[in-house]
Image: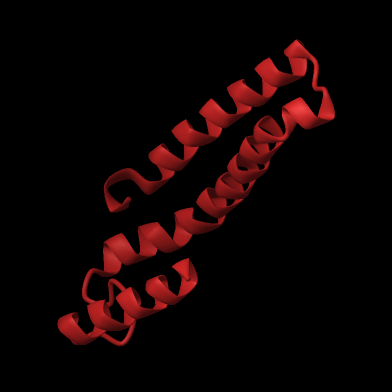
Length: 89
């Protein structure tokens, strides 16, 4: 459902702006987003895994130290994604 909404939103943004691809008319910003995207994507994946591990931690009996490390990792990824998105987020 979320991916469908993303696809629909992208389609409408392109129609409204008259562009063939996102940020077509903003080349510098488009290039910056393109360069940061692989790093932000990797951080997002790590963030999802850390959050999943924290949510399932009670079931798996994680130690307090492991839970603290996962929380720290989660916060680091939030900061990293925020820094990577900058003003595009």
